[in-house]
Amino acid sequence: MLTTELRRAWNFHREHAGYVVGERAIGALELARDELRAKAEGLEFHWVEDETPDTSWLDQDGWEREKQDYQDGRLLILGCHVTHPALDQYAVSLWGISVYDQRDPYCRVVEAELAGEALALIDAEQAEEAGIHVDANAHYRNEGYL
Image (cartoon, rainbow, N blue to C red):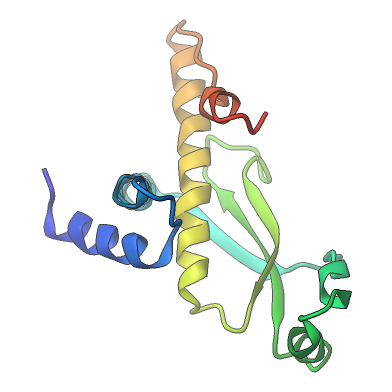
């Protein structure tokens, strides 16, 4: 069922998230569901300065403005990690995220992506406790990422 809250989240992610041809609406729905479930289950997202970012990309042609903005402190390079009692502190995190402001829509997309990973780990842990083996990374292996 598509609730008002789910529809709003879906519209946001459809506008701001991945652009895989023919898959955009499906991906946006996955992100919206993960985002809402993360809220319901109490996942918390912590944004911090990435103290050792890889800034080598700033030295490539075409990134002069961003390099100057980073040197002047306008471009932020951050990390985000998820906390939940069922997770190790840095079990799910992403670093080297470059944004000009933490209100950038990309930050919400990152949180939804990390929520999906965290929820998969939590589900796998709960299944293991029930005696059911679940591969939390199966999706990534099937997509060729692992």
